[in-house]
Image (cartoon, rainbow, N blue to C red; front, side, top):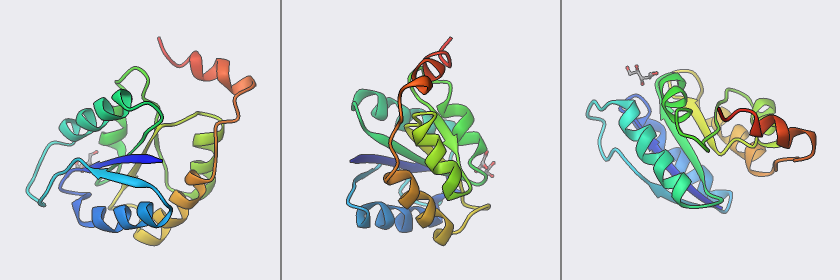
Length: 142
Ligand code: RB5
């Protein structure tokens, strides 16, 4: 699968580890920045990543900020983006199976690399179940 990843300064330190985790799970990863820990505004990176995910059908996105909240709020303003702020592997599975989430958000100040690894393993092996969930997901869009 193709993954795009972006952070702000509060998620920057963990980005390389998350890229390695995604690659070890067999995914292709494109790093959309930033390239240093200089302070940036999380919506700029959320909007950049969402544009890429929407242009590249079937791709996924990973967004990391301090809490994951700002990234998820900004990402979910995009029609067609379903961004899930996840802290555990069960929620990651449900975000794919029931919500067809295409962007996953983390808070670097909330979860560590070990938890993110278990979350991404769970997310990667889960697929949208369709069926009764399809119409519910369609109803999300206004
Ligand atoms: C940056 O200090 C912080 O506000 C940001 O990374 C994020 O947590 C916002 O939701």
